[in-house]
Length: 473
Ligand code: 6PG
Image 1: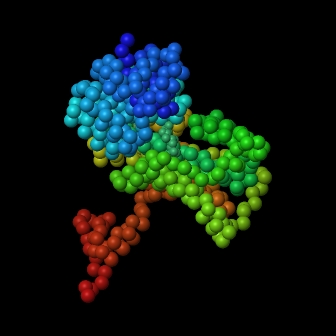
Image 2 (image 1 turned 120 degrees about the horizontal axis):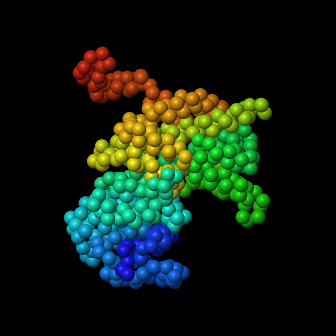
Image 3 (image 1 turned 90 degrees about the horizontal axis):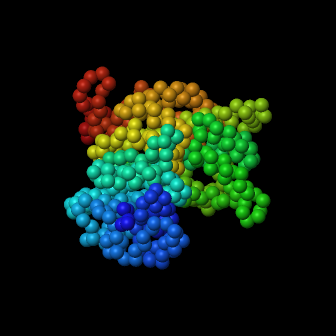
């Protein structure tokens, strides 16, 4: 039978998604610019219903109509090049899906351009890494709703399933909405990763625990509120020894310079653009940047020293470890509160109708940030899809109130020890700012009015005011 769907791009994500789709009973056309890759996949999986093509024309011609094509190519110029080749070969009503980590504004542009030719274009966030692609990713598709409906049956079959059996895919919204939500997912991923790293650092540097001891603590945390993929893999990472035979834990030989491919940065950039605080994600991006200045840090460490470590009595350790756990959970909640606020503001500014009671549940499984507490977020938005801020849902209010003392203690302890906690600190600062009746923005307004006659509003009457700070010269 004719392939019901085709996949372009046979790097690991494309290949694994093609295999995932095939495993659900579909015949899948496959194509890669370099034919040898297509051939390798077809040969390795000769027993499967994969139909290789070696020209893009043959690939398009092989597909059932309306054609459904999933592009898994390197985001950026590569995507535009493939679209350009495809365009003359496609017909009205065909559906093109871009499953790359594409910048959402590129998706908005491509969606509008292709729409002129009657081609449906879906920008789809795909999360879960290589294994997720093969076994069940979390999918965040945005574009024409009619186009989504045409591919929904396939997407629902290949997506991860949450505990209640629901597939981790939903229609996110028009044009770039899916890629936007994936971008925020990745920003949150940066925040979660850095929070775990900071907690590890406090356990190691302040409490002086060994890597093995920390692995056990994380395993324990993974049984409770913090249960998540990232805690689980970090616990596992901490049990692994160097594979080059030094007998050290592998983390002790991995250079402390973090890389990135830019999606966390985009998340922060757009938060700045639309005017919504995204301080935890942004500090997590900065933490990677400052880590990358390793030679500079080595140099500075010879000149700049910190405080003498605080002695921690053996009897206090257990309580401090529990406080670190609470601080981590508290901070994670602040990060998600910001992430959802950002998506809410983006929906207004980019004209999307984002339904968080449908978006939160698709992060429960398949994706990198999958975690038990996404069920709590799901419940919060199911109760009130228009929830102003996650912190105002009773479950999250309660945790924030109960755990705030722990964050204050842990951040203080870390600061006293000279151990950096950029994201944990941002969490308590966001909490204290967000709940403040009065912020010192009155001073900012007075300063602006003083030097630039920028005017201000008053808190006791309507109108715009300017104060005569000095006589005109
Ligand atoms: C996912 C991930 C993935 C991302 C990597 C790399 O959801 O599966 O977000 O899409 O590409 O995590 O990100 P960095 O290289 O920027 O850390």
